[in-house]
Structures are given as structure tokens and as C-alpha cells.
Image 1 (cartoon, one colour):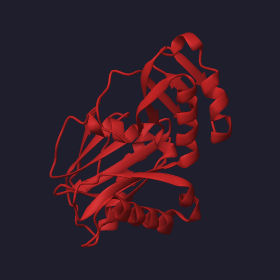
Image 2 (tube, rainbow, N blue to C red):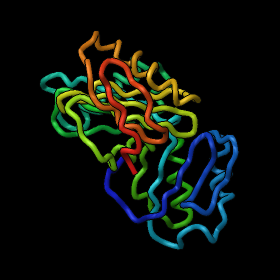
Image 3 (cartoon, helix red, strand yellow):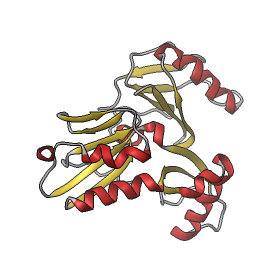
Image 4 (cartoon, rainbow, N blue to C red):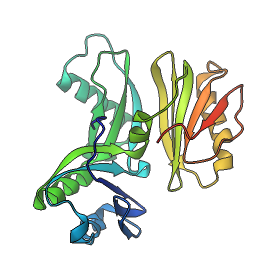
Length: 231
């Protein structure tokens, strides 16, 4: 899931529907079963004749896990086996049908993301049938985080989009926790952050939460909210 920026048209897919750029949209309750039909319903004149697309996946269709990497684990195959094992441990046998991506740089822990393999396969088949290349496939939260304008030694990045909040927390350059969940009321972000912070037994006593997709909110424990921190 590349973090490279691109001028390629942006195809967005998720439970809310399918959108290509800002002009063409197929709004409906979308599932993997009707994804192909929704893609086919996009007007032909809205598609680039050749070239590439970057695909943004709604956060509701992505799963995350911070995976601790034991000493001695190296190479793509060993890292993949570790990430896959951890995802199955957390999310159950459903994760056996997922594809995984993670930061391969050596570290004590890595942030890993998972998408349903059927979703990726259907996107690949649809684009190949139209002579298009998928330049990148990324969850919306990851794409927005790549454009984050701000930094903090202890902090977090949260995106509220289509009724789903995805929030990640970090400290001293390490991801600690990333999770998404349904959230309809932006005012509840403070309470949700409080619940997330409780996982760390008071270790994160203050920091900055960069918030995308909602106005600034009041936060607990000396935390400060910075709204509009990503493009």
C-alpha cells in the first residue's frame, strides 16, 4: 500500500458507495457482493482511457494491528507469517482471507493493515479489464496520515469519515495502537480517546490529537485537539 503521492484519479470505495474523482458517484449500500456491479455502473466517459488509478478504501473496510517483532524475525516471508498470525489471533479465522501490508523497516513493532483479499482481487480484475493500473490501494486513514501537517512526541491521528472513526496513537516515534469503530457523534471523540488511553495505564498523560473530518473537541488528561491537520 504505497504512500507515494500521485496525480492519478482517485477511486473511492466503501459501504457508502463508489466515487471516481469529484464528478462520478454510485451511491448505495455497498458490499463485496455488489462491488463489481457498482464499478461497472460508473460512466465510461469518467474513466481515464489509459494510465493509473489510486484507490482509497473506506476505513470501515480496513483492520489494523500494531505487531511486536521479536528479535531474529527478518525478511518478508517471516514478517508476513508474523503479521498474519497476529491478525488471526486478534480477529479470528476471518483474517485467513485477508491481505496484509506493513512497514518493512526494521523496528521493535510495526503497524500492519489488512483488507479483504476479495476486495483487492475485484478491484484488480475491474481495472485490468479497462487497461488501467492500480497505482496504490490505501485505506482513507493511511492516505490522510501521509498528508499530516503536524508533529508531536506523544500524539495521535484520528479521521472521522462516513460515520467511522479511525484513530492511531504513538509515543516516541512508535505506534502504540490503531483501531477503527463506528461513531456518529463527533462530540463522543473525547470519551472514545479516554477509553483508548485507559489501555496504557496512564502512560500517555498528555499530547496532541490531530483530527481530520470533524471540528476540534475537548479532550481529557491534558491532551489538545488540532483539527484540520491533514489534507
